[in-house]
Length: 225
Image 1 (cartoon, rainbow, N blue to C red):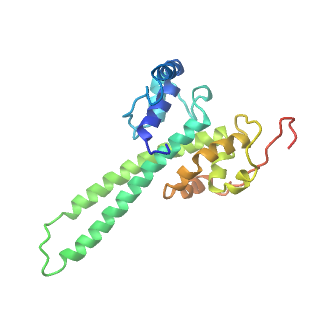
Image 2: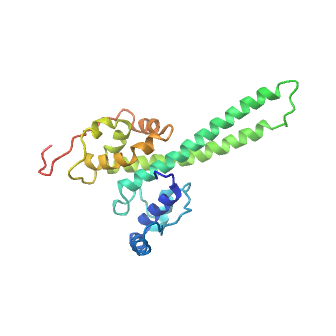
Image 3: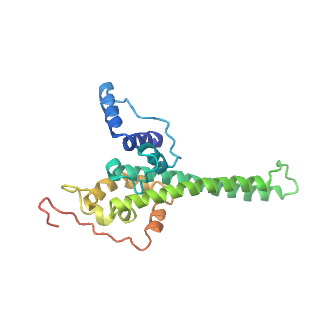
């Protein structure tokens, strides 16, 4: 993910969630071949609906709202959210560029000495409609991923938009599923990735609404805060 190799990351996550046994075989295969060998798909379709794919792969007709906890984890969900947010941001930029192109083109075309080729406004509108539709479909999956993450860990998304209280706690001694300690470990791996995506934190804030406060304190091994 740090190297923007989203297709490879998605291929690994998809295989891991769909078939844990096959994933273990791939890991053993990787160890046998040595450093640099990548046994997972390199050209996975990051634009597809991950939830729909997993519902079919795991058990046709079975709903995986929030995803089965046994088949995924918070790190996978967070990586998937980053991938989708990158796609949504890319579509947003394309839509803005299209509008800017049409504004500049229309101004130039209005000049008496213009020799620009004619471009139909209907064509521009059609392209814009296609981009908005593609973006909306990705936003829906993005929303489902945020719901799934919030279900598994109530701290993480809030810490993404307000990391300082959690980061101040320092490296935790232990971590458990759904804890602030788990949120810390995921946050330190992904904070820079979220920061690099235009509009990512704003989307999370919109999703959370007023519910952005969280309890950042860790628990020691003895269980004392």
